[in-house]
Length: 394
Image (cartoon, rainbow, N blue to C red; front, side, top):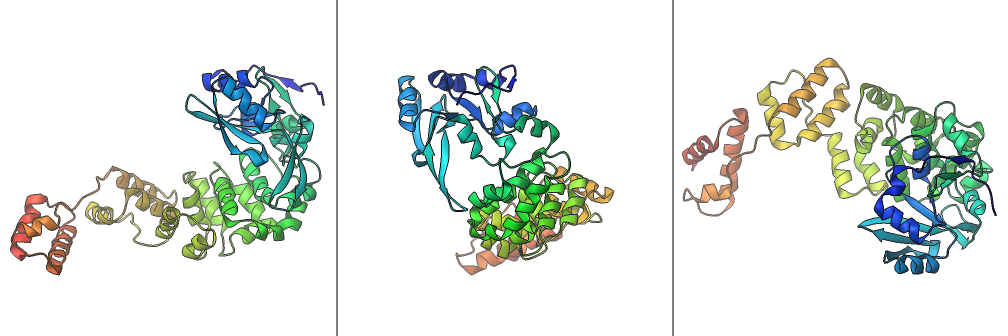
């Protein structure tokens, strides 16, 4: 289908970058799609660049190889080939139309119809495409919706949600990033009705979207809407307090998804971590954020050094955020923590052995005793002083 572009803009600077320019020279009919188009029109920085083309994956591969660009078959079943140029990867996906959907996955067929491909996308602001000459194609009013700050489904909201229930969470991610006013009423009605379908999603997909929602600079309105529609309770059945999160965001808490989950969560962090299958690193940090020693504004430097000897600076600062927010004394405390050097106990097991103590459990006992002496003194004793204390105890 031939449709005139609705907008012409000066070609964005990223189109002139050598790696992308080489790929688009090999595939001159390809267009930039998705987030790069949205963020270009919203005058935001572009992070990820994806392309679409009416060529089949085999034709894409042939064209890239003819241009001496590496083609990696990263998702052939769904029409995706990754073009690797100058060490950068760009996903190139053949235009598609849905044949069958089940709420989680879609069976697709390839097409050469740009509008048909746009029609299967979730939101109007996600259905635009951009040529290398700066022509923006917009089949469903995405440009006007983006400027108005409206997140609107392409077509009937309930139908789009039933195709993939993850679109419920994607709605709130887009709302947190792009919305400027009230949410689309038709979208909210369909979301409320579709909440039970969230149970059909893999927990990994749920966590990925939840983390991206909370990584937005200001997701307060999105989180409130999630609570009002029943979505928040469905994805965080352990319990959540949007007001507490809102207070910390207003206070300037960093755009850190795990820190914000810790602020939002009222239930068991270990249980949430297990249910959503967080990585071991994520689980340990989330649990640690909600447990352990919390520095206090009245702590002197010796007390803070003792805490720093056993915990990372970042973890202690984050706990201070969760406990005190932007109260002046807590702001000052975080500054003190950031400025204090982290003390390191200077002795190891070999230092005990060097004094003639044989290998065995007593080596650890002696080290722990001297370390406690070092902690009690505010972590300021140097290596020689610690050696002297150790020698006294051997």
